[in-house]
Amino acid sequence: TQSPPSSAASAASEPTTAPRTAMATPLFQRSFQNKEALHLYREILRFSRKFHWCNEKGEPWNQILRENARKEFEQSRHETDPLLIAKMLAVGRQCLLDTQYKFDMAEMKIMQNIENTRDRR
Image 1: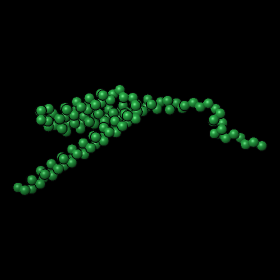
Image 2: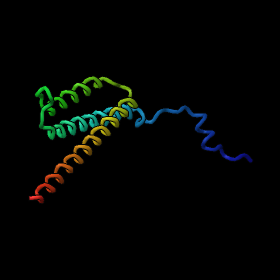
Image 3: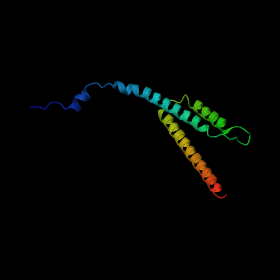
Image 4: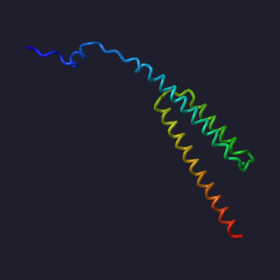
């Protein structure tokens, strides 16, 4: 008496086809990365509003930051490598978080200095 063929043996003899979800994955991934990039870009624009002072040439920093962000996103617009796109998004997100943290710490230090000098009167 022979045992029935195992599922692995029968699967090996039958032709395999890729599931439909596997074919949709690159499109979904691009769509997700596009949304993530747009979200990051908008966050950068919102955060740039806090930079209301000018540089040594008299140009407002918020305008400079917006122009540079736009330029960098435009340069990366036609990138198709999903790993490179993911890396750029991760680096961009980390840079934004680092800048926000440093800005908040500087703002907190200024506020503490103001409070300390008020008490001296």
